[in-house]
Image (cartoon, rainbow, N blue to C red; front, side, top):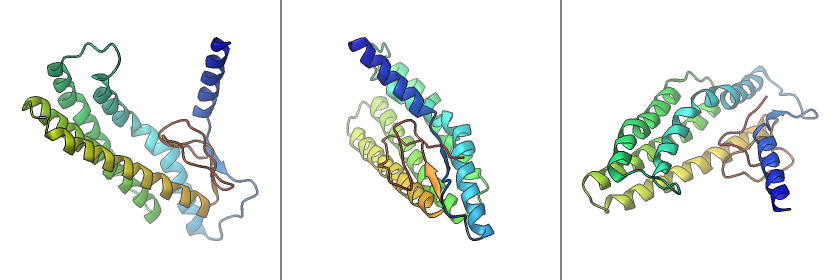
Length: 199
């Protein structure tokens, strides 16, 4: 019975990962070319642009988390090396690629700004952890924790703003963020991934 429950939960999770975001069939059509262009840019940003670079940030987070994984054999010295060589550079590459994007609409530029702020705070938190290990000074860790809290707040702001824009431009969200965003008639979500997808 327990095995069946686990299998069912895994199936639901996999199906949620493939959930997307699309145009509401009964939604009113945008009343201008400008609205249609914004809608298209939001859709492209979420479906194509972010997935193309998200792996850089994901890898950086994975490196950061590797020391805390159950059964990890990483020494503090090895973790310090991977944080410097992989995590920090991963965040910087993600930030750089986001910053270089040529975006037309103010809406998508605003969405990007939240993600840049988030990754910058995450990178700065990792740098504080590096300083704590290098200098054997735990006082850096409180700053790292504050930076991670700020990053979580940036992600929350991004999710809220994206949800609002999806409502405004008649996009229905079927994918999700992590943590999940509460859905409503205009934008429903299921727990799946960092960014929802749209089509």
